[in-house]
Length: 339
Image (cartoon, rainbow, N blue to C red):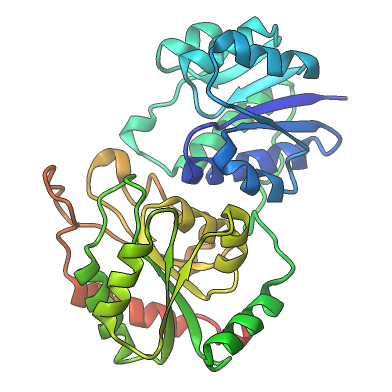
């Protein structure tokens, strides 16, 4: 039985964008045992992925310590979707025969099956770079890659029940779309200011009757409450994610639209095939193309400034123009009670 180790042990959004590659491997080799190497923080999302059979947690030890986690599994191959020297050395120390990864950085000296990728040029979405590595491994086996799996990549069966409970708890109408605004960024990218988010929500609300939910991750509640006060609207509530990442994923799944900067929760919404409105900085390493969400084409819209200003703490963008496009986008989505 084939045993494959897939490595994406960096941030939450990066791991979520690995799901299409992992799903492709499972579709190609349904009898294979696929193990994911992830940090503790992303484990709850890995546990929700039907294509992942086992999980190895990377607690940040050195290469020798990490290799001891690999050895008992006797993997036939590893695929490094994220390559770093420590992890690559651990794969070599564990004696994994086929070590697949990108031909970049010094880490490649420990990989013996390398695919040249220039991710820094951001010529295509990050998830496609990951899928390319999965296809490369499949082709090394002499096989033709099957058609990649389409979204959603995370499938939860309690959407309607949880949605109804939440709507009842806030006294809203089932016909109103639930729109999450997640103003936190986790420091991963320049974002809109709270004032810009408030202006955006007020402008959208003049044309469409919605209920806004402002979500807060760890240490983000103050920001969420500040945005709520700026909106000062009856159709606005705050959700503080204090019960872990898994519960937050289930909560995101009840919404109709997710609005945020380039964050891990944004990519979770995309993997659930929730409609997304994303704001990206203009720099090449963080473009809307490179960090495109996983949802269907008609369920995502993105904005970024024409010019990136390195010292800027917020995005220089025309909020009213964005609001006009977002209003049209939301109107094209299915009715809330059928979403």
